Structures are given as structure tokens and as C-alpha cells.
Image (cartoon, rainbow, N blue to C red; front, top):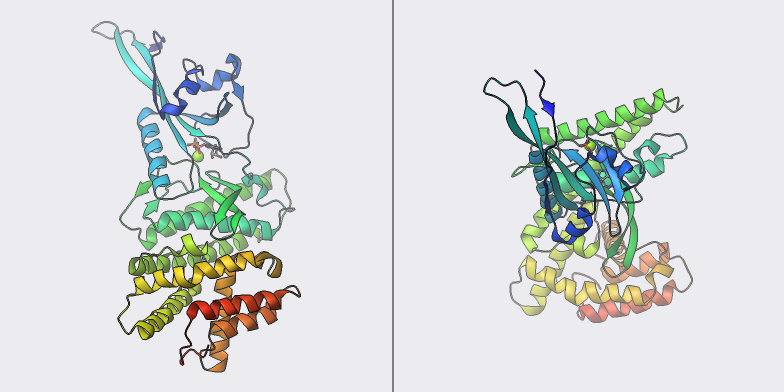
Length: 413
Ligand SMILES: Nc1ncnc2c1ncn2[C@@H]1O[C@H](COP(=O)(O)OP(=O)(O)O)[C@@H](O)[C@H]1O
Ligand SMILES: [Mg+2]
């Protein structure tokens, strides 16, 4: 016989961050969330990915939340996964906690008489992420490949963040990825706008010491599967589009992922050697060749320091010295001298890296090391955008000379 359900009492448990308790207590947790619109709750109609569970977005006086009805154990695991992801610096949802409702179920007709069983309905509560780009745009005709590439870049970056930290998502689909524009602080420049991808839906997340190539590959294939289904949905809804689109997108995504993954591995190795976080200082460096170049650059600086002091200098000391004695003052100067006017769209770090790259290019051509100062002058002549680039570069190179304060014969500066 089917049990008859009666809600006798409905105690509500709030396993949530204390700052949200009062706000959440104002919501009608004693009824299913699917009925909240009948109970005066302000429901937000926001585009969301396909989901298995009932998911609603609500606005309260203080915050807006995403609430998902789910089992208690899974909810607890999901919330702790979000916390772990945030601690690892992964872009993901901010968990508010788990709110659960105890329900009593009367089992009627049992041989030993009526039995009461308790069941629990739980909810994962997260802070709402607003202004998300809907994934349904992705394969539409009027959405250019250039725009899509920016989105694939952001998602590939999220995948690399996860995988280089030994984290397997397990449900890496387009529907579970939120993409939005975000202002991020760039060292020596200030805030710049980037597209960032967020992991939304952390039920299946698992951490390993490291991930095998096969694990990473399966995650990418799963993601490609979700691209196919979105594509198919759009086709069924009558959208006309180029048959090759998805294949091109996949190829692009894979190459971007591989590039970023290699760069990240190199950066991690560099960090182990020097305790220096390249991204934190230079901004996001996505090209692995830049990391190699940067290492060469620091080794050169180490050589110069050893020459000057006549003592042994470690790579870590050389990096530290390079940062405080050369890089930081130069970047400040880039900024005060108006780097953005002379080289529109570039950050100080990008400019530094590009000059460094240019130096290697010139040195290879010349068959000898041309030095930073010559590289700077040549770079300004070739790429500077406005007339005052010359005076800007003169100031920079003069400062560079005084910072280095030494002309190593080998360097030709
Ligand atoms: N905090 C949030 N802010 C904005 N959108 C969200 C948030 N949490 C989830 N979503 C959207 O709701 C969808 C469904 O949530 P999800 O956790 O994936 O449910 P399910 O486990 O049923 O798949 C997600 O794919 C995402 O698009
Ligand atoms: Mg989901």
C-alpha cells in the first residue's frame, strides 16, 4: 500500500552563513519552493540552464538567491564543494548554505501498526549571479565567431583552473557554466573588464591529487556533448545556421584549453622554483612561450646580479629583486607617463612582456643580445600610436638605465 503523506510538523533547519539567517527566515520554507509565487515571494524570471531539480531565483529585501530543491546529503556536499572551490581560487557560486525541512510521513497499513517516518527536503542556496550571458545565444547566426571565441576562452580558463588543481567537475556542461562580464583589478593599471566563466552546479565535483590525461579528456568530451545538444535544440527550434559551426568551436576550445593548460603547468613549476606568482603580478599570461621567456629574462637578471655583487644569487632572490628594483618602478612609470594613450588597450604588464618579447625577436635577428633599452626604443618606433610616444619612451629608457645602473658588456645596454 502507498504511504499517505501528512505534514504533521515542519521544523526548518538553517545550516547557513549567519549573515543570511534573518533574511532567509522570512521565506515560506514550510511549502515547496515551486509554490512560493503563491506565498508572496518575489520570484525573478532569469534565464537558466536546463536542470533536473526545481530551481527558483528569489529577491528578498537584502539579497537575491538561487534556491534548488535537493536531497540533504547532496546539498551538504554541494555547499562544501563550493567552499572548497572558492578556497582554491576557482570562479564559482558563493554558497549561502543548506536549508532543510523535516517532514513526517505516516506509513499506514504496516503489520505492526502505524509507523511514522521522517523525511527531509533540503535546499542548496547560493547567491544569485546577475547579468549572465545566456548560452542559447552561442550558436545563433547573429552571434559572431569572435564573440563565441571570447566565451570559449573564458570557459577554457575555468576548466584549466579546475584541472591544474586536481579538480574534476563531473557535470561540465554549458548549462552549468555561467558567463558574464566582470571588472577585475589588474596590477599597476586598475580595473579592466573581462569575460569570466563560473562553475554553477557543484554536486558532482571531486578532488584528486592530480588528474590523468584520460580524466581531463573525458571532461572535455562531456562538455562537447553539451555543445551538441544545445546546437540540436536550436536546430529543432528552427534556427538556420552553418553546419560547421560546432566543429570549429570545439577545435577552437580544445586548442585554447591545451595552450592555457601548458601555460599553467609552466607557471606552477616557475612558482615552485621562485615562490613568485606570475599571474598575480603580470596579469593573466596565457601563452606558455611567455612563461619560458620570462624565466629566461629572470635568469638573465640573476646573472647580472651575480656579476654585480660577486656572490651567488638564487632564482627566487633574483625574481624578488627584479620585481622591486625594475618591474614595479617601471610599471608605475608606464602608468604616470600615460601608457594607455601611447599604446591604447594595453596594460603595463602587457607592455612589459611585449617589449621583452620584442627584445628576444631583435636579439635572434641580430645574433646577439640587444638589451632592454634598445628593445624599448625599437618597440616604440614600430608600434607606438601617437606622436608623444618618443618623449614617453625616452623617459622610460632613461629610468630603465638608472634602475639597472650598470651596463653589462654581454648585454650591450
Ligand atoms: N547562483 C546562481 N545564479 C544564477 N544562475 C544560477 C545559479 N545557480 C544556478 N543557476 C542556473 O540554474 C541552473 C540550474 O541549477 P543547477 O544547480 O545546475 O540545477 P541541477 O542540479 O538541477 O542541474 C544552472 O544551470 C544555472 O544556469
Ligand atoms: Mg545543472
